[in-house]
Image 1 (cartoon, helix red, strand yellow):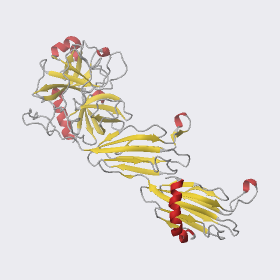
Image 2 (image 1 turned 180 degrees about the vertical axis):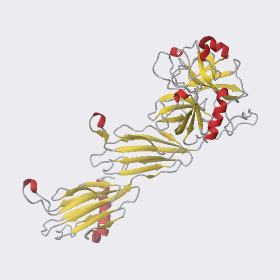
Image 3 (image 1 turned 180 degrees about the horizontal axis):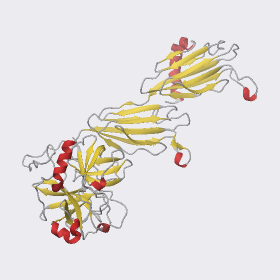
Image 4 (image 1 turned 90 degrees about the vertical axis):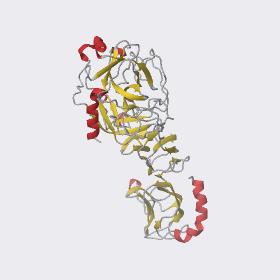
Length: 522
């Protein structure tokens, strides 16, 4: 709210507040009003100490504007001059400043208690001060299916000395927050010691996603956890702030006709698994992830991306229940530094509705040896801190039974965001897929020898291959209409050779360990 708007409100309230204005201090809790020194505009009295207290409710900011300010000048010599009559301003217990003469406090804002203390000596010759105050929204709780949130007074400049908290409850649904406009005061300091002067700190549940200032706006937030935005400003210059929109949506319930294949009785998933509402692209065998073929968006709804808190993809994985993901042990994520991202296709898109979920724990197979160049037991369970929301773009893959077998006749695919060239550096931005053929263990050993164990299954060597960045991702085969997680991307030839078999952790051989650890850690 600008000064002109404040003055309009003041004009309406002056008459009603006249008696209150002539008092010496007081507590002011209304939405707007005026305060003055006693007797204003005549001279104030001698030996006064008046305290004006402006209380703010949670989610409010108080702005006090000194429209007129004329106290006695300082007295004394040169550097030793002191104020005889003065106004002290406190933000809570912190003194903002001490003012006298015509050195006005100007405009003061705070989201806590503001105190103005006026003191006069025994010699009065000045009219004093006239100030207006108004309270506006500062943060709050934002519910409903759709809405907006902004810095106080947006699109006008926000005030100084703010500490506003914006709370967005997820309410058991998928919450998306997008910052449409963002301009705060930037960083100060030198080199590695630069710090934000005004900032927004974003929390996804208890996880701090980052602190943002200047024109470095937060990326779109999509989560099933509550979100908090903490907006703080200092006492220096300001900017026009931020404007954000938010939505909450319910998950899409998957319903299938009764003629669909029954769930594998060994699988831990409650309900349906291995069913994609969006039909995958049927690619000929020569297409491959290396030199990439894009998957139809969300046609592999169990595919997850393991990412750093900055959004960098480093491995894939597969959702097998609403609480559990399977990846490779050599991808083992750090719960304090990494996230599981579900429902993603285009990593550059801001319009996709994804779920970014924190990790409760990661459990690698105890017989996995990180230093092995051809690692055995390369499998890891990742427990989600909050359950995944199952819907059209996110649903689990089936786990095959421990005694199931899969051979070259199976219809199998591998998917991921890995490198699209064995000699390149960048990973794919959009999810890739490749149709691939399973190989028998003897055939695979013709290439890799005794490195191939019973815990491994091979595929490819036909112009198809997984590559760096695909690690931990799924090798799935369709059986009776449902997709089964047959393998987990593990290792392969140098430079992602498409003419040597890619090696996967064999899920059937590791099924007993998976079941035991999911049961023990539920």
